[in-house]
Image (cartoon, rainbow, N blue to C red; front, side, top):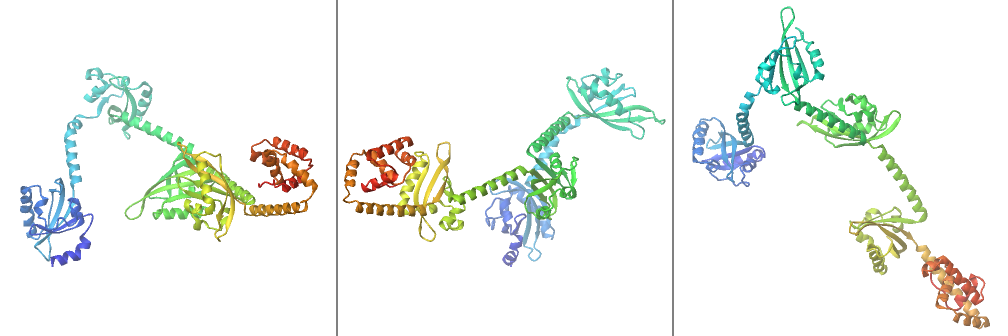
Length: 600
């Protein structure tokens, strides 16, 4: 029956917050998770253990037994706080509430709460009270009594010690010398404010203490008047508030620094309690929203500054925040006819019933950032238009993260969507034609190691539909770490499929023309003469002649042969004179006839 009762109640009793156990014949027959946790045992490890194991010694065990069990036997509940032993041997203080089961009096049920922290705190407080009692008892305020003409008639020992004077040196003399000279007029003016109806005046002023230092004191002055309302004597009780004044000064300076920092960063702050209709604001918040600089504003005043087109979303965001959704909002405000962008953040705290306790937050003017975003967006749009016209695709390789990204036209070029291709480096390299892959990798490696100024390659990429697209790739490392390891490479890719096709068709046409010319001039005496002339050409002249016949300009020939353009032009003239030719067409025909045509 006990097991059945425990089984039916275990789900309810197995709390993580209150320890519960059942005891029969001085042995633990059931204990919940909290019981095991607060005594340092593994789950179910206490089951079957004698309750004696929880006590520090036999004496404390027998004492508890003699007090608790008689009460339990009489059907009462025993409550008490006693020291107990944890599994690791350490001691804790626990509050026990034990009684027998109504339907099973042989079983004792106990709820146990760990009171160790509060017990130790109480003991520590008692020790502190004993330690500092003598100091507190000896420490009193300065007390002084003086006549209407400010002559001292009584001073206590604390007053004498503070100002370093004996009673005889003070009684019969005026208090003025101990006060800071600049404060005396203010003190006398405040003392004159005392009346029979207003006999108490508090004054804060500076004084010179025994060592010559200046301290701040707060004096509570009470005037004693006769029946006619004439001031007869004043009693003043004072305390040293120098540290308080220093703290106030530090706080004031800190607040001023915070206000300056907020002004520089254009970041204001606000705070509110559970009344969301009014809240406190900093000076910068007041400036940003053009509100009165009085430290407090209302929801209506603030909300009136929000741009009409943004008011609905701002109001919805705040309502969501009151339901626990993080508040991070960007909206526009209208201030003095101008639009500003604001980013607002807030941290809201709620009670156990979900009601707002307080909220603090910041508001930052991000108008400049928004302008930069707009400028960048326009720049991106112009770049995209320029790339569209040129056919170029931007490629960005994050080498450290092994990820590729490309412009929008990349997907038009190869037919893939961003989701289909992704950013994985291996997937992108897998698009390269296998016959080109090793050559491309070698060129990439050379550039990454700094052996080439830039990466240049013509290769083929696989289209989504399966055909090959010829491209011209140019890129350069733009970022390296302190050890010169490449981090990022950016470049462009150009579809040259049509250009390659036209070049191939052009070469085929040239070869056909060459064949026709040879056939037509096979037995020409002019050809025989030209043959002798061709044999007289140097290797460099033959090379340049072939490039001219291939349609290359003097600049292109110079770049490929590492010659100055002027040098190539000089070679061109020499060839015409030597071969008795008059134009580029003659040179082309000559080169074709003698098999000197070069490929671009």
